[in-house]
Image (cartoon, rainbow, N blue to C red; front, top):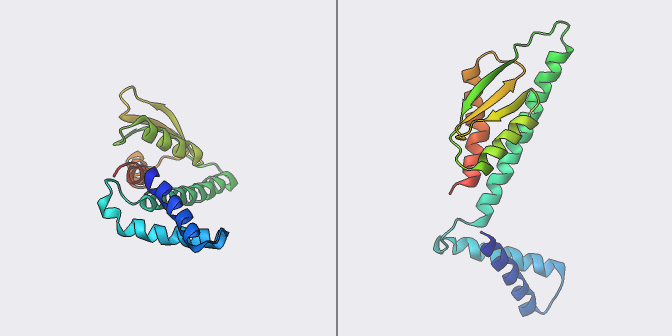
Length: 159
């Protein structure tokens, strides 16, 4: 992936050299032209096209921002009610993530989302213990985390 980016920048400089113009617009034009060439010939590379991974990371960040806003409004709604009607609890989330990096990212995303907190990761890295401010259905909450964050993390980290 990094090799493709370095090649893209190198080809942009070659483009500038061939045009005998060392300006930013020519660099951008060369970068876009070489990006197109790399995309066309990406089937000959052993790895996927590098912008595909970049797009998946942006998708994960957008998912996190959406969940951040939704959960923030849910927490604010609970706080502003005259009578607090929350059912706090701890539940176990069995994860399909394999590497420590993937599990760390999932734990951080859960902790950064208001109303939830990762308490512990099991020794075999298969189970996360999560505290939630309002648990109506632990299975539904587990499925929601698996369907959003865990799925997006696997798309980013696995080919």
